[in-house]
Image (tube, rainbow, N blue to C red):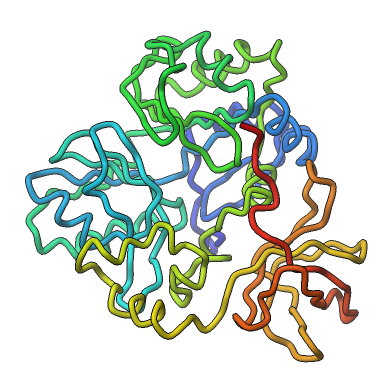
Length: 369
């Protein structure tokens, strides 16, 4: 998604820092964002072996408060938010009646009457409007995105770096839990979450402190190999980890079961938007299935390339790219369920020529314990 003609790009509070650093900037979902600083491959490998620092302040934040907050979330999201404890988070989806999602999201519980949802930048306004439209429960719903910058510190040395400048010590913060914390003297919300397949943290804080916090973290992590990383590496990292990207593996025509997101689809929790369709799909089967593949031929597959099986065009590549850490060319695509056998050879059409690939299990990469 790009900004329409005459529409100014939005800028995060770190925009001047990115430009001064020589980052390559692109229009991403109407935001002026860094796609790379020192090269996608270098940034990707740094996150896998040391650490990378991402500006993700373009992401949206929606607060849901009041005695009926949980009832609204149970109605509009796919996962079971009733299982959350205070200061625990869960990956979920904002549901549509056809069993697809208007967005994927992370739900954070502060208290029984206070929740915080992180949503994708491209979808923030429509997500907020949809939650408001579905709010027949009387909960208080607010788009609080302007109140927050967000920085993601990701990689095997992220804890070591974050611990240098954060109180309380983040060592005991479990995966997909969060807390109120002070990082580099700045009060905010520290979550042990991320989108790279590595250990790491996301910190939500007032935008006015963005440059101070960014520079302090880079200084604290310099000896550990921390470097700034852009959206290019963020995309290749999540692909290696087999994570869905909204608008690619997940959209308003693809159900959660088709997108391999049955694990965040809690059909037994009771009624929620789209549940009837998903129950029927679980009983009767899905129309398409998301698979991972590795290229056998040397050429990389790219988003949108046609997929062929047994001489028939059966789908398109949803995400395709070289995998810098694995040193392979990989991708994901939807194919008919009866063709989704691991090990099966398929063909990817690359500039009019069919190139061989093989279906493999997802994820492509899983970090060492």
